[in-house]
Length: 441
Image 1 (spheres, rainbow, N blue to C red):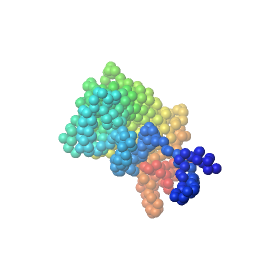
Image 2 (cartoon, rainbow, N blue to C red):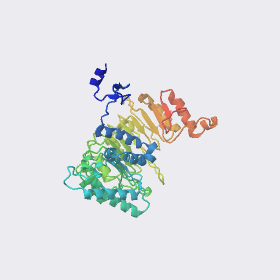
Image 3 (cartoon, helix red, strand yellow):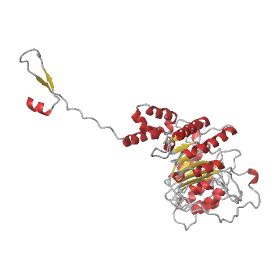
Image 4 (cartoon, rainbow, N blue to C red):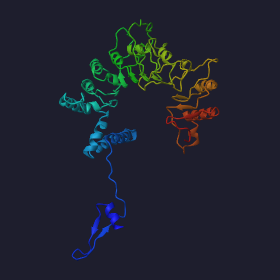
């Protein structure tokens, strides 16, 4: 038995109870548990996936305040983990202060100057690691800060060859030099999402907008969000202000554009080119309603009619600003958008109509600002043509919490919500509040 053990385990431990005796003997110490196998180190690719899930969890709104500190702590664990986590740390950048933007730009410029042509990768780090840049919360209180941000972005964008998602502050207009910087950078074809683009609303379509150059270069664009300057209250009723322009320029080619948002924009060269361009993949549209009666130059009704055939989601949205200007929405939305699953309306609520010979509409979710008795009658008349409708959402109202008096639950908008809930429940439609919660949920 002992011989088998010695032969099996070459590292057997021998015990000699009486080392100075002539025949003390030797005892072999046998392990009670099997020898633990040596753990193989995980490849860096697996560590990158693990840390990718961790970094994605830090991006949640609930942990946004501690996200930067938590990411930095991962970089301080060890050098091997830092080499894997550092590209993930720079992958998604969110800046809310011009000073931080200036420091980040200087960091990338210094790194790019130190990069030589001997390396096998032509782009410098950490610039090549940045895939998303979010400046939506950037605070610019002075005009000098706006100019500084524009200058920094002009220098920063060429250093981000793999940038796929760019979110700008919607209060800062896009300048000509920033447009040139975006168009001339390497990897313009990798740009998938552009949001927060501030453009000027204009009825002059003879002069081409400089931002059109970006759209012509970004043929793989999937999301686009543009903000206009609205419409002046005194210019909404100018006679003869309708748009009539001979479209002879080359249309835009955006075969992958899925989501488009045009906020506070009734007319502009960019919107005009988007109107006359083929957008075969467009399924989500967010737009501010401007009717062509109050605003003769408005392209919104024509835009919805032109691209509404394949829309699955249509959101009519008017920003909360002063002075508040709300314009009527088209009444033929269900006819011009036959594939809608989600329709979000804006005040004043339109009197929706649908032809009696028209087949049943696949609408599932209807969102309105606040319930109104007049619109409830319109909705009930449409329910036979909306068999798939399951949810009606009041996005500006919240149910009263339990414990409030019975009079509070039947007064004002809460009473109107209760009436809607009772009458639509008979048709199998659930009424939810802004948090998508039914009453008592």
